Amino acid sequence: MEEIRFLLGTKDMPKSWYNILPDLPRPLDPPLNPATKQPIGPDALAALFPMALIEQEVSQKTEIPIPPEVLDIYALWRPTPVRRARRLEQMLDTPAKIFYKDESVSASGSHKLNTATAQAFYNKKDGTKRITTETGAGQWGSALSIACSMFGIECRVYMVKVSYQQKPYRRSMMQVFGAEVIPSPSKLTKFGTQILKDDPDCTGSLGIAISEAIEDCVTSKNTRYSLGSVLNHVLLHQTIVGLEAKKQMELAGTYPDYVIGCVGGGSNYAGLALPFMRDKLKGGKKTTFIAVEPQACPTITKGKYAYDHGDTAKMTPLLKQHTLGHIFVPPAIHAGGLRYHGMAGIISLLCKEQCMEAVAYHQNEVFKNAMIFAQAEGVIPAPETSHAIMAAMEVARECKKTGEAKTILFNFSGHGYFDMGAYDAYLSGKLEDYEYPQHEIEEALKCLPVV
Ligand SMILES: *Cc1c(COP(=O)(O)O)cnc(C)c1O
Image (cartoon, rainbow, N blue to C red; front, side):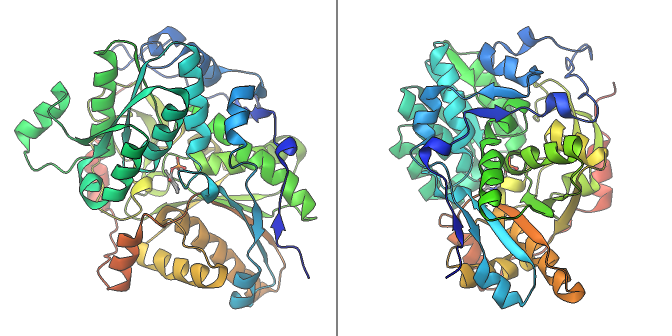
C-alpha cells in the first residue's frame, strides 16, 4: 500500500517562524500616518498591539523563535498532516500528484488558531486584560476566543451583522469560549452609531467592524486590538504551516512544482507559501505560486497596488497593498473569509514583483469542484478553501492534457462544517455568480488617499 498521509511528531515541530522581510526582492514601503502621510514609527501602533508584535512587524531577522508556551498549545493539534489526494487524482485521471496541508484539524477548524495563540500569548505577557477584534464569517472570532480563553483574557468580537444572522453556530462557538459577540454596526461605538443613523438596515462589512473594534480598543482600559490577517506578524505566525509542509514533502520524496492557496487577507496562503518562496528567491527553485480569490472580491486581479486604509473609518495607518478601496462593501457571497478589500503587503509585493500569480473564480464553479473533492476525499472544505482546491484541480486537468506529472501542493485552510448553509444554497441552485463591475471598482478606487 502506498503512503498517503505524511505525519510529523510533536518533537519535529519547527521551533522558529520564518520571517521573509529580509529576503524580499525589495523592501516593503513603510506604513504611513493617515493624517500627515509621513512614515510612522513603531510607537504609533503601541495603543493597539503589544511591543513584541510590533517588533515582529518590522523585524529583519529571518528566524524568530516560537515561545515554548505557544508550542505547548500548538502541540494540541500540530504538526498537522500533509495528505495526498490520491482518490481525487484517480477521479480526475491525471498524472499530477496532488498534496494538501490540512489546517482544518485545529479546534477552530482553520489555520487562524496559529496566530490567535501567538497573539494572545504576547498580549498576556504584556499585561493585556481584554482584546477587541472583528470577524466576518466567524472563523477569526472563533480562533481568538479559544486563544483568549486559554490565556485568561477577555474577548469582545464585533461580528459583521449579516454573518451574525446567517451563522448562529459560529456565534455560539465564540460564546462557549467566553467571548462577547456584538453584531456590527452596533450602538456601542461612535462610528457604529453614525453608520446606523445614516442607514439603520446596514448589514455591515469587515471594514466597519474593524473600525468599531479599534475605536473600542483605544477608548477602553487595559485593552488591545487583534487582527487575524494582512499584517506581517500574522503572516509570520502562519509560516509554521509551510515549514512543516517542507519537511513533509521531503518525507513524500518530492518537491512542489505548484504551491497554491486562497487569499482573503493573505495569511493562510503566505503561511504555506513563504517558506517555499525562500527557496525560489534564494535557492533558484522554479516553483509556480498561485493565489486564488473570488471574482466577487478580486483584490489582486482587479484592484490597484496603492496606499490605502485598512478600515472604513480611516483610523488605521496607510499600507501599500492591492486594494479595491476602503469604501468597498462586498456582495454577500458565501466565501465570507475572502471578502476583505485589501491584501497583505507581503503578498501584494510578491505579486507585483511577479514572484507569484493570482487567479479569480466564480463561486458556482468553485462549489462544483468542492463537491468533486468532497466526494473523492471524504471531507467537506470551507468555501474559501474550495477556491484553492479548484485551482489545484485546474492544474491537474492541464497535466492530463500535457501528460506531465507535476507535483501540486495546496493549503486546506479550513473545513466547511459550519458552512452548510452555503452548500445548501449551491445545491438548491440559489447561489449567484457575481462579478464585481469594473465601473464600481473604479468608483471605489476614487476614494484612495493621495500620498
Ligand atoms: C479566514 C480564512 C481564509 C482567508 O483568510 P487569509 O488571511 O487569506 O488566510 C481562508 N480560509 C479559511 C478557512 C479562513 O477561515
